[in-house]
Amino acid sequence: MPMSTPAKPTGRRKTAAPDTAAPAAIPAPAARLAAFLARLRGDVYPEEPSPAHDEVTAKVYARFKAAHPLPAGATVLDVGCGQGLALRLFARDGLVATGIALGEDVAVCRAAGHDVREMDLHYLDFPDASFDMVWCRHAIEHSIMPFFTLSEIFRVMKPGGVGYVEVPSPDTASGHENNPNHYSVLGHRMWLRLMQRSGFDQVVHFDVDFELAIGPDRYWGFMLRRAAA
Image (tube, rainbow, N blue to C red; front, side):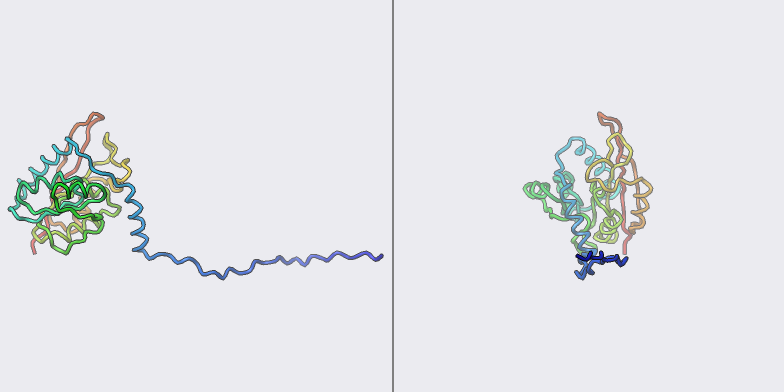
């Protein structure tokens, strides 16, 4: 019986059929940003009442009022109003205040009679030049794009209006940069420069120092003014 001869290798490899499936569509930049911000909603936590914050807020508000007194009826926006600590102070002075917050704090404020909108601080959904004063105490460190947030604060402030921004200092005993939803615990000079670049023609800054059981802590206060038209 004749022997069969094995086929000689040709040296050619079989190639896979080309993938003709269309590549997955990449979401538009705005959609990607919106999805990222929505994911960060999981980091939001309610601002529980704190005697220390009550005391510091009252002190810095008194200092701000002495420098920038506002008449009754002036309009105020509280960016990141928490459970309404500053809103109560504004109401006592006859100011017409609106707050923005996320999560449980919105319901707490509304139950207390405050005008509070559920709104992300990255996008202030108010018309240009809406407020005589903008208050933003311990909120902007939660912004992933603080330059844009400061520019939004400038935009909604009336020409000739004033504002107050307070942020935690990095590298203190409190370790503010380790907070899960602190995304922008920047240095003092960086904050100052961002405020100037946002358009404010006057920035007055001061330290807010106090002692905690774990050691000294520091906040930075910035009093802002937008030039009159």
